[in-house]
Amino acid sequence: MTDSAQKFIPSPRSQDCSKHVGGWGIPMTDFEYIWYGNKSEDDYPDDACEPYYHKKAQINAIQVNDTLAGSGDSGKGSLTINANTINANNFSSESKFFDIPHPTKKNKRLLHGCLEGPELGVYVRGRLTNETVIELPDYWMGLVDPETITVTLTQIGSSQDLIVEKIEWGRKVKIKSGSGSNIDCFYTVYAMRKDVPVLEVEQDVDAAP
Image (cartoon, rainbow, N blue to C red; front, side, top):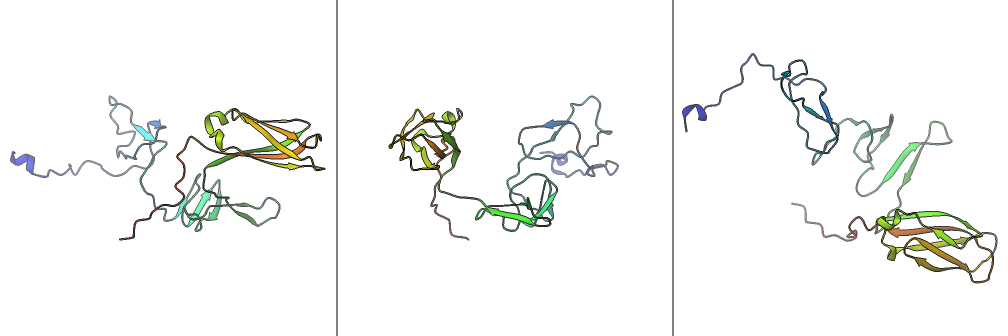
């Protein structure tokens, strides 16, 4: 190894290595780790390839010390979403909330908690009147496990002795009235997603160091 290879050679003092504000170039739409170039657009060589800037990005961890602007769903401290600043201290993996301006009362906010369960489920709901078949969305064929479909029926106006007769191919729910009445009911159909891994409801947690 030569002496020059072992010696640290600093950048010329005349070279401007300061950070320039903003970004320019070609917007990148895929998620990659952030890299920052410190040449301004005016100083960039004309014969060089135009650089990319990150329109989307990913990092392994993020700490927000002041405010987080734009769209987001969790954080600590002050969180700004769609120009509404909210207190996000309760946003964590242990609880899920949404906090929005109150729809009917001025100068008040509406705070709701999210329903949670041991599965990643989807649902459809509606009303069935003088019909015997609930047509499920066509996208359910690729989204849910048909063996997990459950149906809740709420009869309207009178007792109809409603029965789920059968579920065909995960696409149709056939309903009948045991009393022979005309059917008029609200329905909710639930199913578990099949495009994501099944949740491990109970997990071992390593002891803190």
